[in-house]
Length: 196
Image (cartoon, rainbow, N blue to C red; front, side):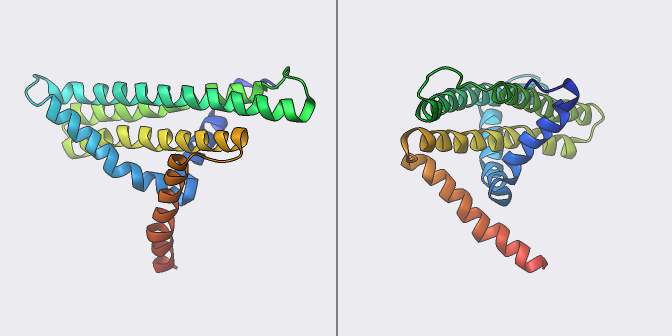
């Protein structure tokens, strides 16, 4: 079934919500130091470049977007391969394993990530223009953090696709899941207990 264009915002929000709520938001905790490191690394590389501050948000967006596209393409490929195997086992036929709602879901995810990261980048420039450097810096750090959360969720999805296709996850995908679980149990669950 092809979704209506009016369903797009809800589908986009749902896909991004899944990434940020996985293991109670542990991916955001993992992404924060990595995203800050990526931002700092690019600042060091472009230390003596004129207009560095003006170029940095677009550079962060571009580098992170390329990484996101690469991981998402691999996630899409492994998802198609896993679906083909599952369909072949259940029906005995290699035909009909691609579902249009899954394809639309991939398109909405791509569109949603572009829109949200684009808005974060736009707000970075707006706050830079009006002179709110601290707020602009927070939004600028949000660009790689947002992308890394979405990329880590795609990496988790790749692991799930391998599980569906081969019956087990490779160790590096299990490692990422275990790190997210440790962050959830070690930090997020303890904060929830303190609040309650």
